[in-house]
Length: 407
Image (tube, rainbow, N blue to C red; front, top):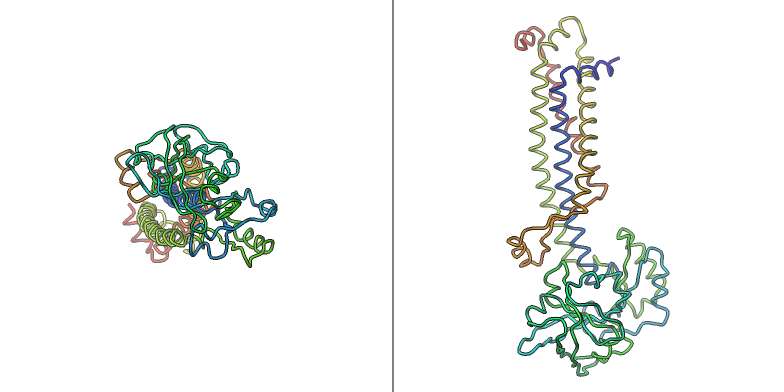
């Protein structure tokens, strides 16, 4: 009976009810958008770094990560790749040979990161072919290279030109060679686009005098949350006396720390947003209480128990909050889904400023369920807490005074 009465009371004043629902629903949408953008930026940052630099998990020679030189390369066993790819949730094992070289074209020179890759395997990690903005990819048996657009701009070369690479190879061997540029690539991380040179793995091994050697075997998975279980399986399967298995969190602690610090600042901003939202919701509850003072005074004067009136008002608040939160939840999903599939790219004016800090000039959004559920629960809880004001007002209400003030 009380619930039925509360439901009727909600829709007795439709304007007031709609204002309350809209204010709470807007709070859910706004907080969800803000949190989605924050988590989306983290996901993009991690994906860009992991899929270019290390993979989610990396297998390398013990000591390589402390001293990343080509002398710490290792010779993989014949069945290592098959063994790794046979582990559950592993999408691919990508072989790499990485080192630095001096890149030169005519009178321009610059330090470059040379990465020897297997084009077919690399598609699962960096997906190099989709990053080509000019020219074409190379085959594994060719002696061509792909270079970053930033490096090409600095060296003032283009597709079809010949780049000279000079370095120190395996165990101090001289490394020098000339390679035709088959294409230019561009990645989301500007500092990488400015120095990367991709080379077919056999050509890189020959260039560095490191035949059949790898610096790392990068593991790719479509389930980042399963990285810990994959890492544990790899440790069981492999001989860890010579090889080392590391996940991306261990290899990139600066990235993890940066995200954690930024996440704290994001939560503080979100709390400030909640304060603003809370004042807005409190205003609607205050209006709802003030408008109904005469009604409350009449009900109490004719003998209605205070606790029953409080229960009715509490039921109204719960119903309003549930309707509003569900409405906000339903509206935020398609809105965030749109921005997830259509990230917001910043104008050229801001793009240059962002790239100075090595940040991709784009706002991306996350579709993680926690984005929606956590905001909905927080706003719902806020509505219940702020709904304590009408209940407290009824407890302190004097019927005669209420009828006089409510007219």
